[in-house]
Amino acid sequence: METVEKAIEFENRKFSFKTTSDRIMAAREAKDLILEVNEIYKEKKDAKLMDLMKRLTVIKQKIEKRLKGRPLTATS
Image 1 (cartoon, rainbow, N blue to C red):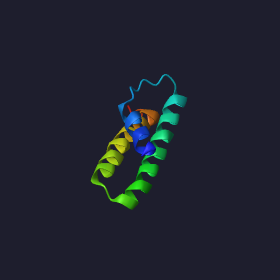
Image 2 (image 1 turned 90 degrees about the vertical axis):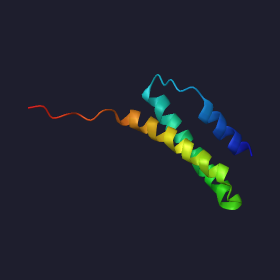
Image 3 (image 1 turned 120 degrees about the vertical axis):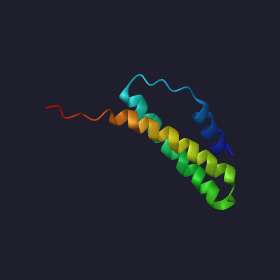
């Protein structure tokens, strides 16, 4: 259950990214954790693991949204 512990620690971590590089690394770490937890979920079918994956996905999406930035608006 080391993977689950790492995922929970990642979820509870305080995110204050100073650089784009930090955000990219965090998004990749989140993706890796989601995939690892998914492998465990395939075997055990535990609803708690699914909830954990959902929460990690939300965090990952927020990080990726921040990476993409705001869209430019067309002004006439």
